[in-house]
Length: 308
Image (cartoon, rainbow, N blue to C red; front, side):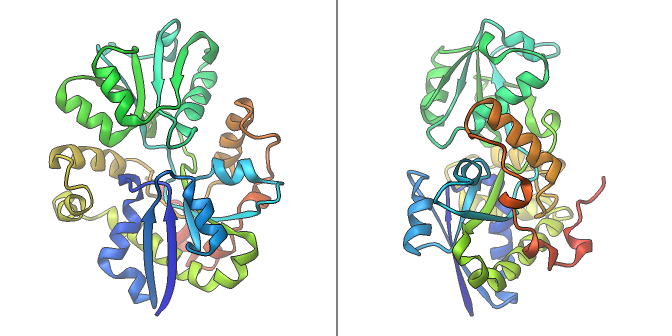
């Protein structure tokens, strides 16, 4: 058996295709043993790539984008999320929410796990012709801390993951008024990347891994949610089953798990948003940021984005 070690920025529901592939034995079917570990703090994924403790990292595309054209050379080869599975939660439910409703308001945007929740939200706000500067954003604290503070009265809205959003709805402390998988379009939210100097060495294992991941995504489209419940409970035993199921169903209904192939147009859009936030010095060419040779070796029919 070949071995592939993954260092991930989180242990999250949006990574479900990887966990499902492991449960079904899809990696083993391809002669691969996959070991995955979530790092706290998440920046440990970069340390693991440097030391060789991990072969690949799983996290936001914004990290390789920020390091593009620097001495730290990273190669992105596949994605696990084709959309940004986040939500905006407020207290009262607006009849029909619009981004302009937030002008003069305060929004909590957790950032201890990275800057993407704020940056993508700011991008959506700009695309709606609203100036993010007209909204007060509180950032740089963890999701649990911001949720606790929001439920104690701080702020008017909070950006969060779908599991947390569903949990808040279940507690009646917040209402989802904007689900990004429905309103935010496509985007490579979570991707796999490695050190560029190890890409050729890892290529065979990356093809095996990515092929299994794509098969897992296709199988998830037809699996009954009740059949997934034992896997969900095993990974997140502290989260109420109805909350997990509701969040999982939102992702199953979306394009989040459509394909391992990273969309070029969606990537350019994400890079534009990051550049507007000055998180990157220049917009990297897609073909310099992403190497498609791994995905290209998978059956083209399986790698293509399904049309619904």
